[in-house]
Image (cartoon, rainbow, N blue to C red; front, side, top):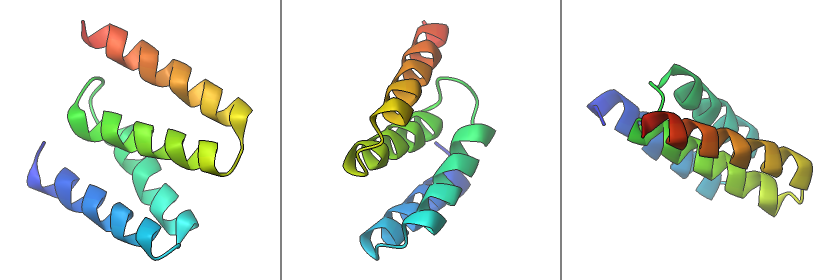
Length: 77
């Protein structure tokens, strides 16, 4: 994981802690979209968005994200 990606993750985690969920999600979505498949930063971002969806009880969205994570991970093998 490069320094820029790590900084983006940390900023998103700080925003989550401050309960600024929309801003945090935007950063995580950007990181996930701009990471190469199977790279740690993108997967961490996807997992955190997935967890956020579960906490929001948006189970259909969470299921879709989980399938995306699974496909991303399988593509890396």
